[in-house]
Image (tube, rainbow, N blue to C red; front, side, top):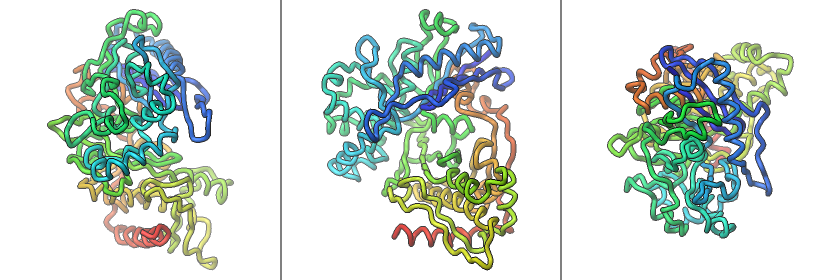
Amino acid sequence: MYVLGYDIGSSSVKASLVNVESGKCAASAFFPKTEAPILAVKQGWAEQDPQSWWDNLKLATQAVLTASGAKAEEIKAIGISYQMHGLVCVDKNQQVLRPSIIWCDSRAVPYGQKAFQTLGEAQCLSHLLNSPGNFTASKLAWVKENEPEVYERIYKVMLPGDYIAMRLTGEICTTVSGLSEGMFWDFKENKVADFLLDYYGIDSSLLADIRPTFSEQGKVTEKVAAELGLKAGTPVTYRAGDQPNNALSLNVFNPGEIASTAGTSGVVYGVNGSVNYDPKSRVNTFAHVNHTASQTRLGVLLCINGTGILNSWMKRTLASDLSYAEMNEVAAQAPIGAAGISILPFGNGAERMLQNQETGCSVQSVNFNLHNRSHLLRAAQEGIVFSFRYGIDIMKGMGMDVRKIHAGHANMFLSPLFRDTLAGVTGATIELYDTDGSVGAAKGAGMGAGIYRDNVEAFATLDKLAVIEPKAADEAAYDDAYARWKECLEKSTNN
């Protein structure tokens, strides 16, 4: 028996087939093999043709079926993870009316800013838990004003994952988690955010019907079954945006648990057990996969642009003769705190965590008679970790008790120094796992279909590769280094 998971990214579409009995991935594949194109008709725009997602999903499905040797009837449920905040518009015949405006498109920023100012920051934050920003509702407002002929033909608007589910099943539906990421959900009233829709002049009938995240959300049609090589009637039983799904993949469901990634940019995604928001809107808050009206589970999302990109810059600039593993060893030769050097890693654009300030990266307190390459390399990794700690403190200010951080064994988390520093400066236990988004989506499907009783059973076989505990003996040194770094940050941002 198998469960099938799809991860619909802006770079590629990945499929994974998970064996229910063993809990292991039987086969996975992604397409295209080179990064998928993003259409940029104007500066700041970013669009993709939803048909291209489907074409790549078809290729990935056929590849995993061939590689695994699984029979279509052995696949009992399908789950979907997808790039967040995108807008797909379809007519009554379920035909796409225009290319999808995807997550990194910035054309709707002025619309969200004006709504935030006009409706009032307190109103937006207390109900939406975010600024309307550049999210899906604001993208739809842009279409309404700039493409009225398209807007008039819209039957339903969807997120990318809703579109894929529609193609599989012929049914148009969404989730509360999905509506919240689009700024369509009012947490205070526990219903669709009519006040924002009314402000934009958008009819709520354009929104899809709501289904639970873990539930039957339609069945694969006969036509699609023949096209993909699946069995007609196979249910779609789970869908979630990529960051909530990444947390699910790492078995992060409960208040105080954190999922983190640290690639070019870094993400800290924590679960909050109470409805709250950051009054400075430095983080985003959405309904987590297991959020319900009776059980508050909110995903608080912090994104830091300057993460692994600083480490790779250091390698190119100071350590081109070393592998990343060797560079980590050289960095570890310097003491905690890098003998006084502090590096602010914010050299990859404006940082939302810093209220959209673009401070640039800075290296502070270098002593030519004391410091060498090892100190700089360590200070870079510490600076990245300290930015995570700064963001986690924002989360703590929202009532979160951060005790454990789950991460995939990839990118910056391959560095023992990075992991030890994160545990040391946050006081949290770091747990490293071998998983990815499409595998998580497959297990989410198993939960939605009732194949797994709960997340404990679904992730019982999740490979835990390492556990890193904070070391009490190093606590004072990390605290001193972080305090010095934070002082440098406050001077540079005038906070």
